[in-house]
Image (cartoon, rainbow, N blue to C red; front, side):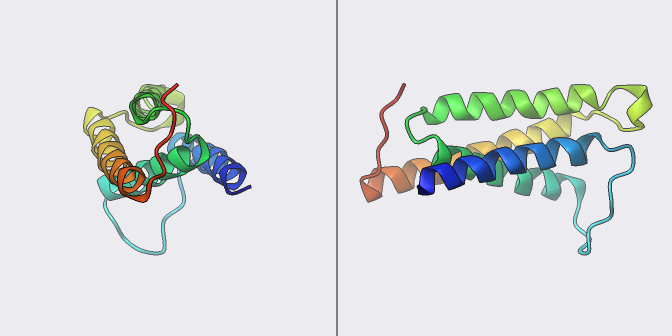
Length: 119
């Protein structure tokens, strides 16, 4: 059952991240943090949820999928009607967060005995 909860949380968080990234005027957060910090928190969280929800998927595949998701968001933000700006540095922040989360999840799997089949 925990795997299913991670899956639901992952897809909910991914949908939320996509909507927030594509809103022409996203709401202000109650705490002032930089744009890159928001990207990193979002993609770190998505990575942990994906790894928990899909333990049989290799961490490399999860990393590639989330990197592509981040790139797709930045490309979509180039659409003038969205009044957003795609930024390669935002995508880099996404990938740094994904990599950091993958390292931590990999270490946790290794030392907790929760190694997954790599399919």
